Amino acid sequence: MTGVSFALQGAGLLALPLAGTSLPLTLACIVAFSTGYGTSVIARPSIVADSFGVPQFAGILAVMTVPIALSRAGAPLAATWLGDWRFLVAIGLAALLAAIALIPLSRTPPVDHPPVPTQDSVTGHHCGAAP
Image 1 (spheres, rainbow, N blue to C red):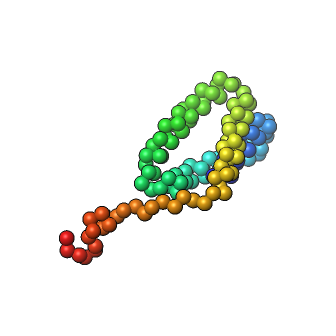
Image 2 (tube, rainbow, N blue to C red):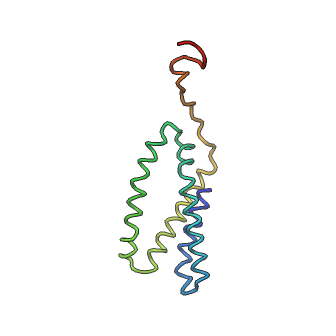
Image 3 (cartoon, rainbow, N blue to C red):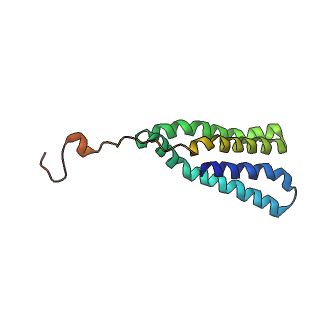
């Protein structure tokens, strides 16, 4: 599913320079990009939890947040530096490359993580039992 969302983002960005001044084509590109982006934002936490396990969730998500924030902050600077359609093509190709990179991962079974210990299993107490 995430690969499809990256592909939608890439297709929307690559098609945007071709839309010209056509409002319907521009809106279609924006909808494609926004749908892909929104899906990836919603899917990210569950993908991290499924891939690395719930106990490592916070640490992995924290490590991911820094590069994501830097890329969001740097994107307008890169767009200004390139100055025209090249930025959209470069970012669109990067999104499509990310979608292609996820193809092998979609074919592997999820990792089986050991169960997270509960308070009862750590202390040996059971509900209703005296300590």
